[in-house]
Image 1 (cartoon, rainbow, N blue to C red):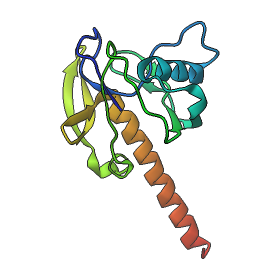
Image 2 (image 1 turned 120 degrees about the horizontal axis):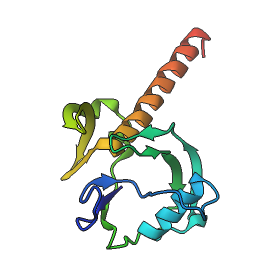
Image 3 (image 1 turned 180 degrees about the vertical axis):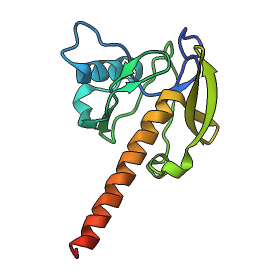
Length: 157
């Protein structure tokens, strides 16, 4: 994950994934994700391997985000672009994939109440769209595991 630069106009200092807007030069949204990962973290596209994506996520700031899941080869070292990224950090997958680690609270924004999800890792507060996407992944995997477990019991596996 990244912590955005405090100098940015939108969402300064917040925890996020690398990413950004689709550009006319991008062949598709995966190309956008690769380009943004290169621009923000100097991650070479050939070292990033697509696993899949989650459903579109609509943010309270009226963006539509397509979260991609990818595996980055272990020899890659992120080099944050200081004008965009203040910090790069990792969070244990076991923490992120446990839906019980997420909390929620109401926030009033744009004349509406929204439920904001979040979790804390060390001194980092992961909240908003980033936390909701992680929570969605955790929830979907937990549901899939429960379904598969139930199928195994039913079929004597």
